[in-house]
Image 1 (cartoon, helix red, strand yellow):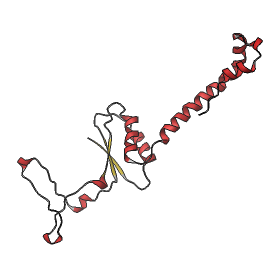
Image 2 (cartoon, helix red, strand yellow):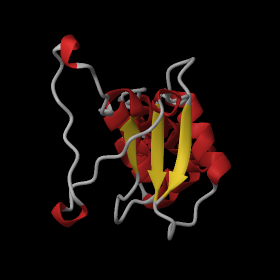
Image 3 (cartoon, rainbow, N blue to C red):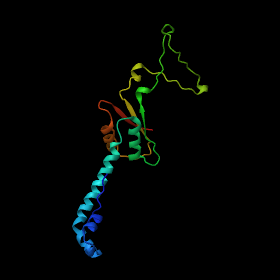
Length: 158
């Protein structure tokens, strides 16, 4: 971004004889408001540039939420429910990969559900630690702003 150095411009436009500290300060008094406006515009530009780097990609949305709400530990994460594997039982005739059930002593959990339970109404789930105190409405605002239209989500604590 361009940078306007009004102090330098005033010094260059004054004749060398008049370039004393009091004269420069006197001439710079009306420019203080302009300098303040320039600094505010730079801050707004940096803020807008930061938020323009994010979009609806899961990794970027997760990065943004962690920056805003959990900057130190970064415990907020997003799970895309379309990529979750659910076990199905098939007949032998269908020639599908077998699903194995295990004993409790083997510590391998396989959960069986109805087909209606596998059909998720959400496209992604945002997991938030229960120890984190945040403004949920503000989080929903940022998620709604960056998510793709028509995508549904849910916020859950863990």
